[in-house]
Amino acid sequence: MPLTVPMKRTPKSHPESAPLLAFGAHPDDIEFGCGGVVAKETRAGRAAHFVICSRGEAASHGRPAQRVAEAKKSAALLGATIEFVELDGDAHLEVRVAHAIKLAGVLRRMRPGIVLAPSLVENQHPDHARLGQLVRDAARLARYGGLKELRHLPPHAIEQLFFYAVTPESEPPGITPVLIDVSAPEIVTAWTAAMEAHISQTSARSYVELQFTRARLRGLRAGIGHAIALFPNDPLILDSLAAVSRGARRF
Image (cartoon, rainbow, N blue to C red; front, top):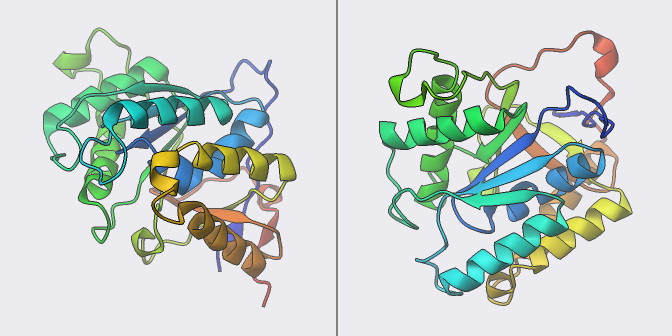
């Protein structure tokens, strides 16, 4: 069964509080996939930054300018800053070394501790899985001091890469998830507002209901209100068993 591990509450004044960096292929991916996690982290004092790799220009609903405005509003509601990185465009993303190096440059510039990216499962929007692979590659390249394209920035090694799933079909099989408790009313309120800010999308489909239903089901299985699953790219390292609060075996 998955573990329910509450994220550490880091005071705002803590000098070693490395930022949370979240990548999205489209303007709403982060909010729908893990917005509650971002809200919980920023309200605990951790800085968060969004990197969006398209403007949603291929979407059936919403024009790029509207999608960008919605993303900026949503990020602010979650307490995060945001930037847009130009790669191949919506629905045209390809896995290229040049893209991985470009994203590695973002990692070196922002120097995050935790990185969130879309899962690698192929049964979803193809941009999601491809971006997840690019971020995974970028996290490795960011560490290599001899990479000539990035010599102007010091190398950086992140603490952990977690994948998030925008849809149930994109949840990685064979990986035990970490469940983040997002049950607190202020977190639910912030997450709801952030998702609803993407009015061009939520007016077309019941995205908010879908995400809360998923989070509620996860929470019920763990004996809490709502939980969001994150899937670690690498095994987690704990200083001791004291860091493990409880498991998710409720039934």
